[in-house]
Length: 164
Image 1 (cartoon, rainbow, N blue to C red):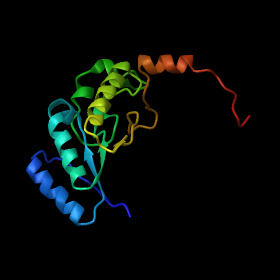
Image 2 (tube, rainbow, N blue to C red):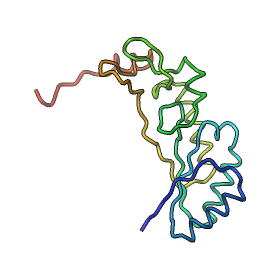
Image 3 (spheres, rainbow, N blue to C red):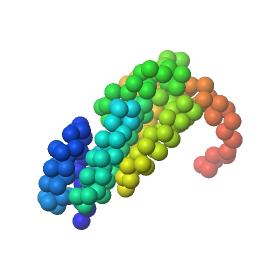
Image 4 (cartoon, helix red, strand yellow):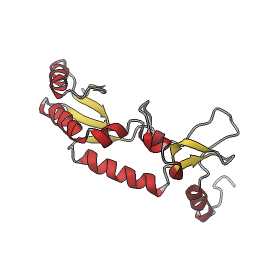
């Protein structure tokens, strides 16, 4: 039986090694390491080492898109979405949201770089953690209506309704 656990926030590799050994000894078979924007910007080598340690301990390693661009689940701070209004999602009232647009080429380029960095760690699996458009509390508000999404929608072929 597969048994997994999420493990985040620890960057001290000696501490990680001890924890991964304990997890493996306790019967865990999988570990999920969130890989945030902060990890991508400042801790790539440490994350490689953490993932290597986890694999050495016999654990299958999943890596998740922890809060990246506020497109994916996770409470991690997103400098990407807060500092780059060019790639922001836009609601139906024309207001920019603090979340990157999944369709924006700048965000997609960033994600390609993120994936390449994670692939270099030799993790077993990348978990796309709940990608989504920004959710408004009000029912009559929705995303995304940025220029990119409008172009995609405009160029989408009209199909007949299967219910007609």
